[in-house]
Structure formats: C-alpha cells, structure tokens
Length: 156
Image 1 (spheres, rainbow, N blue to C red):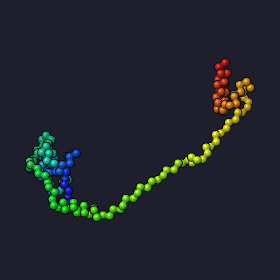
Image 2: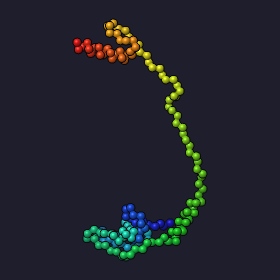
Image 3: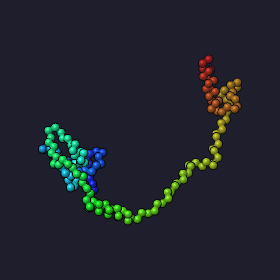
Image 4: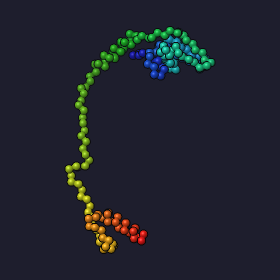
C-alpha cells in the first residue's frame, strides 16, 4: 500500500509535491516534480518549501517546474486503505477482563503485643554514698550524672 508522502522539512506535515536532489560534484540543486517512489538522498518538499529553497553561494539552483500541484491519492491507495480497514474489523477481539487487584499486606503483625523494654538495674559501688543518684532515674541518666560529677571534680 502506498501512502501520501510528507514534506521532509522538520515539523512540516504538509503533503509533498516536489522532490529536491543535489550533486556535490556539479554544485547543483534540482527541484522538480515529486518522484514516483522515495529516492535515497533526495528530499520530498511541500509547495511552500519547494518555492523557498536556497542554495549555498556558488551553487546553481534548477527548478524544473514553478507551480506545484498537490498529488491526489490514487484509487489504488483508497482501495488498499479500505481493504486494511475491512481486515482489521474482522479480527476477533476478546472481551475486556476486569482488573485484578493485589491487596498489600503489612510486613509486621500489628495485633501482636509490643516487645517488652529492657529493664536496667543500678549497680552499687564506685560512688560515694552522698552522691548516689535518685532511685527513679534510669541507668543512662545515672551514667550522665556521673560524667558531669567527674568533670566537676577534675575542675576543682
């Protein structure tokens, strides 16, 4: 199935009406009617771009025609398009399936009782009786108090 060719210029979707070829050896660019099939190294151009082609200094531009007519789709193109649509409509399409959802489960059992916290006990000895910490302080508090008292003793 042949299709309508578009302009080779970037961001241009207009149908091609002319073909531009060039020869480095002859320093010549030729803009002529649209080639029947795409050619390697040639550019298909829309009417606006075919009329606004410029060439480098020293090059020659040859325009074989100056009025470009849009190429109409041939009956072969329309027949091929209709055949493709008919073939696509005959394919059996399975009915859509409902989406499957996966329920995420927590990695930890939230109903389980929390792990008990460790209990610290105060070890007797090492400190003078007058400097014993209170009984309601934790072991980390007691060690912090000892460090403060030691630093105060070193200053005096």
